[in-house]
Structure formats: C-alpha cells, structure tokens
Length: 423
Image (cartoon, rainbow, N blue to C red):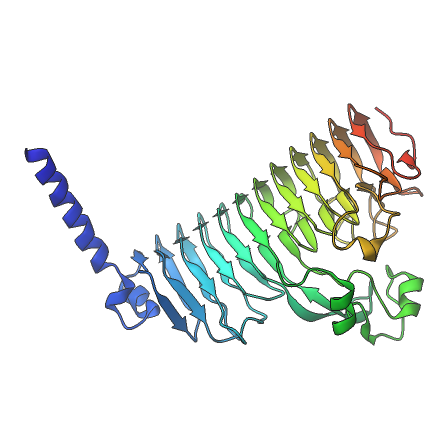
C-alpha cells in the first residue's frame, strides 16, 4: 500500500517543480528565461505573440512544451540561440501571422553553440531566404523530427557583385534547414514541405520569375551567353530543403531519414565526410547535389522521385581548388523513379538526366575524381522523360576515376549514358 503513496508524492513533487519552471508565471517568455538562467522552461499550450526575438544563452537553457510562439515583427527571427552549450528547443510551434509571414529572418537562428538539440519543433510560415532553422558556427548539434512548412517567398536574387554572374533576377527563394561552418551535426527525421510556391506557368507569368531586373555591363564569367542575351534564367527556383555549407570546416555531417517535398533543391551539400541515407526527396527540380569541394560523401539508400533537372549530381564549383576538391565518394543503392514527372518538368524539358557528373564552373576547378556508383536503380514507367540515365561531362576537366557496377538503369531517349560507363 505504501508504493502508490510514494509514486503520488513523487508525481506531485515533479508537478510542482514543473509549475515553478513554467513561463506562464512571468510577464513574457523572455522574462522567464532571464529570471531562470541555465534552466529548461515549460511553455504551456496557448499562443504567445512576440515582437522581439527570444534570446537563449548559457548552459542547459531552453524551452519545451506545446505552446505556439507567434513572431509579429518581420525584422526579427523568432528564437535566437547564441554562445549556448547543450541548449534545447523541443515540441514548440513557431510561426508568423497572416500578412507578416514574409521576412528575411530565421525561425530559429543558432550561432556558436555546442551540443544544441532542436527536436520535434514546427516552424510554419516563416517565409524567408534565410533558413527556417539555421545553425551557424556551431558543433555537434542535432536537428531531429522537426516540421518546416511553407518557407519560400518571392524575392530578388542579386548577383551583380559577383564577377561569375553579374545580374539580378526575380525568383522564389527559401531554405528549410540550413547548417554552415558547423562540424559534427545530425539532421535526422525532419519533414521540409512547401505548399505555396509550386512551379507553375501561372506563377511564373504572374511574378515574372526568371526575368532580369538588373545587369552589369560585362557578362559574368560562368554565365551563359544565351541567358545573358535573353535577360532570363530558368533557375528562378532558389533555395533548398536542406543545405549544408562550408567545405573543409563543415565536416562529419549526417543527413538521415528526412522527407523533402516541393523544394527547389532537395539536399544541397558543400561539405566533407557526409552520410546521406534513407531520405525521400520528391518533386524537387534537383534531388540532391554535392559540389564546391565536397569530399568523401556517402549517398546510400535514398528515394528520389519526380525530380526534373537531375536527381543526384556531383560536380566541382567555384569553391573548389587543389586543396579542396570533390570526390572520393560513393553513390549506392538509391532508387530514382518517375524522373521528369515533377511540377518543374515544363521548365527543364526532357533532355536532362537522373545522374549528372559535371565539370566545374571555372576552368581551374579540379575535376571530380574517384567516385563509385553501384547498386542503384533508375526506374522509368512508360516513355522516359530524360535523354540519358547518366551524363558525364566531357572536356579537359571531365570527371576521372568513375566506377559503375551492378546498376539497373532504364535508358533514356538516347540511351543509358552519353559515354562508356566503366567498372
């Protein structure tokens, strides 16, 4: 008879403790955090409008609970975590109200953190070129089981300061989860979904997407003459579902078991020693790419369906050099299905490829080198909407050390590949 009484005493003690640590006892969430440094605070169910970002600092600080935080200031992120160790954000909903959903700021912005956990958080209608969940200059962080929904907005991509490009254009832009300059991060089991800006001819015409709004006197070095003369680019879907940036700094990253839907680029990697496994990327114009010096990338066991430009692409870029080259990677046991049947097919046409291995953006970019491609399937039902299952770019910097084995590649309209695939 004593055991139930003991359990009841423990329960009441824990309940009292939780009540003491609830933000409801304070005039604001920020006031609660300031009064309880280095503690986790409970956010009860209900709406919490704010006009300034919530700032989290210190060690073992954070927020958890079923509450919904509504940022009414478009000039502020919703939560900013800086110089924190083992901070946690769990179970919350973060959003912006009607009429103030478009911003240039993040839902969660974490800077210079270590062992940060962002778990089961919903970031809804934070429509911004910045990542809905952004981690920068941090280490050993985890972003798990979160939902990012409707993160894109109309924008202008201004590349006039770059000698490589030299123009600005109308676009849709936005990133779901962004990690940069941050080694040892785990991005796991998240859903990143865009419902608003699905690429249709009507949306393109209404907002003049792809049209140049500014152009330098001199064409950018990597810009095609055709697009320059046309004052238009097809690449007006900008941003990514998940992007991991800064090779040589961002290292030992795991992108596992995520669902990305209706993105521009599904998974965009510029980092080293990466595992990309068990993800589903559907209806993106690019399923995933690794470039700008992405070394030792393992891409295995993913589903890529209804992509339009390519499903898996490896290539150097302007960020690559002799010390920071692309390659030493494995692509294995992935399924690419219904390629060319995505919503962006009308933009890119049928002369594309599920696999793309390219040369660099600049003449001095070192070639992609040493890649194993094995056990993959490119599966097409009906007439294929691609030219080749595999395209390997030619020229003096053609990819080197490419090895293909045990793949099942349904041929495109011109065949399996544009060149011999050597084992």
